[in-house]
Length: 287
Image (cartoon, rainbow, N blue to C red; front, side):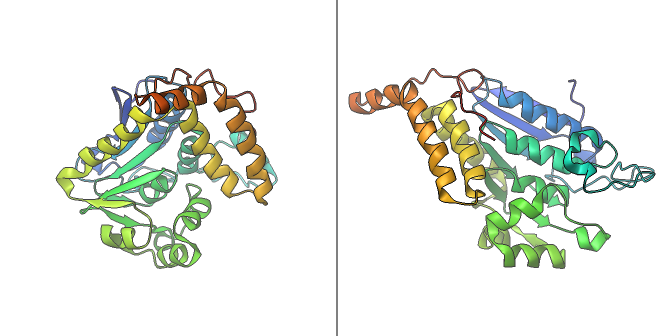
């Protein structure tokens, strides 16, 4: 795909995905939805990518849906009358599916750790998109808002699944129901972001964290950790996590685990050779 609304830049194991409509504050479009979805699935099986950093060009991260387009601004087909039963196969529902949800599901499915570097305004889909990322860093200039009630719609981007898991129900409801725009300090105190950085230090901090992961961990382990944490934490009983963890440890111990133990005993950096594109254990994906 020839990207027009994002940049896909890989350097030494780190992919920088930059939303690239700075003149529109990186407002979200259907093209951006398709390109981001493609980029996350592409990166998932790209062995040159160990960690993904997502940020915005210019002064904003993403100012929400581009509301200036003609017709239904969300790209929805108003002639349809979709039902919940039809949504059993959402891939077959063009003109109905939430375009932000397509992106967050692509992030959820990705095998690579994802760091959000929130450099400015993150509103609407700009706010819900970051909820699907693993670690969120915010510039002191960041402003975040789940503004759906204020424009008369409902939350999207799978945010009603992600946000309560990150910050709890009470904080989620407060932010969602008021639709307020809040600053980086409140995002930090509420548990949405891991760290607040000076504006000119945000990207260096994101790359520092990405290097820590890329240089010291096994790609297959990272993929397993990511999927196990999200999926097992939503399981009905801890025995479900026990089953998956048992299989994960069993298969990982046969290859990367041997190298990791040897490196530890020999006091040297590990040389993990397994690839997440081709060497995932046979039970993966278990869902």
